[in-house]
Length: 401
Image (cartoon, rainbow, N blue to C red; front, side, top):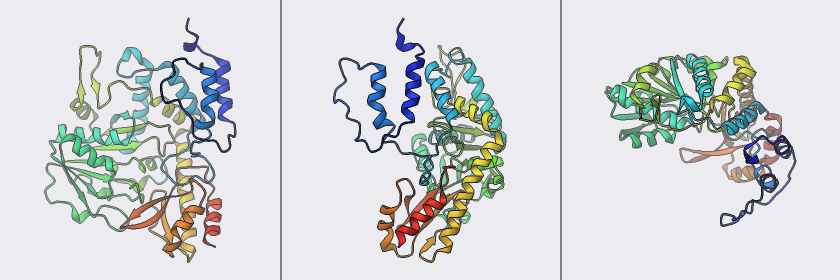
């Protein structure tokens, strides 16, 4: 029997112990240029890779991490990812993933009602979720164009291009939301994409526009999980959309690659994007063929935390963003771009000449930058429940001195 395909408790425990070490500063990994002829052995490989893989990675759960839409993940997802890797289930075939297929159906069934949807399926990210939704719109509603704001995620224009659909980007108001008056009069063959949580500013397009077009898709990749929290009304109207995309690897705290595409009429949408094959026992739904059991870590998280646990962490992140915004508004040296709607804080120093100095002095991972109307702004994203806002405020104050 090949022992590399068997459970090795000692080396698996060693892998966990390597995760807990402090590697300090390490050089980037020095990999051979050509594929090695002889292997090092699995245990030696772990020791070789750990300093660079673990030591050089961005620490998304660090107290100073407040820059991106990429959260830390709970340890229960690490365990489930290990189980997934050991089993290598393939949801394309019921015979190779009998439990995993049921788990995905149940997880989707739990989450879809929060968005007024009847079902859907998981994808590796909202880029594919958006593509899948617009593919369904083309097949079900006969659309020939896609309309979205100029702040819509690049995946919307990309999906339109792939699907052979005309794409029109419409102007936004100062908050970053779509200007409703800019919508074309004739939307009878149009898919309208509304963004719930714009990447730069976190703005939510007016969901009162849902239903104005032949198909309305809401890209709620970032802000969608607010529907599980006390802030659910910020996305009021989403339940009337034809489809919704949500990235679980953002505010549901899941590992990459985990997202959902949800439909109001799931039977119709899935039927329109399903294909069969002689080797398939059931139709293949959506873009993916073979795909793994990404619902398992999400299931475990939902069971471990419940809706209240998810909500508490999201609401805490929202509170952190409000605290940072309040500090910025109260400091005469700083300017807040707009009140944060979905945990994204955009700001800059009034003396723009100090921008680069401030950027260099902030802790690594504390802030990102974005350009709005050809002006540079700092951008903080409340994706990390472990962030220490007092630490960030202190560092900003020090850098401004």
